[in-house]
Image 1 (cartoon, rainbow, N blue to C red):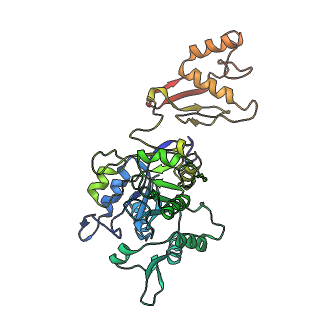
Image 2 (tube, rainbow, N blue to C red):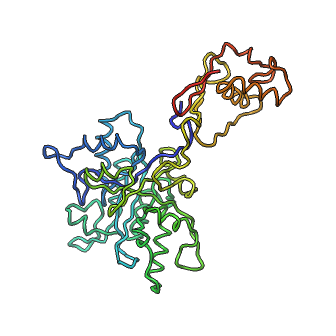
Image 3 (cartoon, one colour):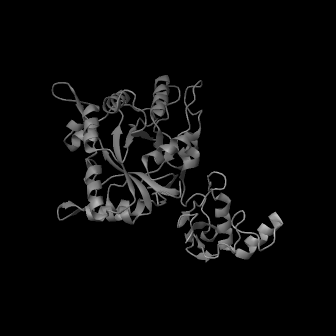
Length: 393
């Protein structure tokens, strides 16, 4: 069976958390003088979050160390991890003159070699003693990482140099932190700030924010310039944990108070392509809420149907808890599959419905044309509900 046989399902995603050893504000307690990777990986593994962005400032070292450690502890895990490069732009537009946090999310398959190439190409606004711009790869000290900023042009140039002149969002996505709707909201009356706000919005594929930001960024008429529109864009949350207590309390959780946190649900496969799907359908694919969207009672959801000794169907067909589309040519078994499901749930009711619809005798109805239920009595089939109960025909 293929990995995502049920198609797109709602799962929790958190694209912004920091690992032990993060370049700034590292609050993770050491174990015997070393980062406690065992504890960190266990918290990640035991959480109900399926897709995570492992973030660090101007560096991707933490992602690659984490991936190696996690694969060692949990080689069979199906969670997916995205490299998250956290940057600061060298310009501010909001009323509080806060710097803009920008995140470049890469494919989970990003190689260390490609990551290093990008970091070498990405120039910061920090200069060396000779007056040359330093790249992200040249930053060494905590003070280097604290002071570093990049420009929008720096990012575009590094992307073009690393991924090609025709680079599109197939290997990376850019997310910008909205800072409670103030991150890229310009001071009213400042034409320069308004233009910067619009250009920053255009640079982003998506945003980090909260429930109050979501409708704003789904509005295609949000740009400061009256004559311009921009596509609706998805909004994600991230726990932004920098220490164990916060990671354990915030990851995938709804938290009230000063450190308010929210869960993000994404309806997509656990892949980079699944993440990109949210750009196409931002309102339908990404939600910020406590419980899973479209949640149904388990006894109302058929999880799968199984067959034994059938030449027409595989041993198992799984279903999505939402809408299912059965595709096939004429006489390929689409109607028969539905008949088997109905008959497995309630044989007598299924037969009564067939008799009423066709006018046939009870001995004549069955799963297909010229095939009666007596003809398939040697085939065992049954459905399993989401509540793990099974019924058989």
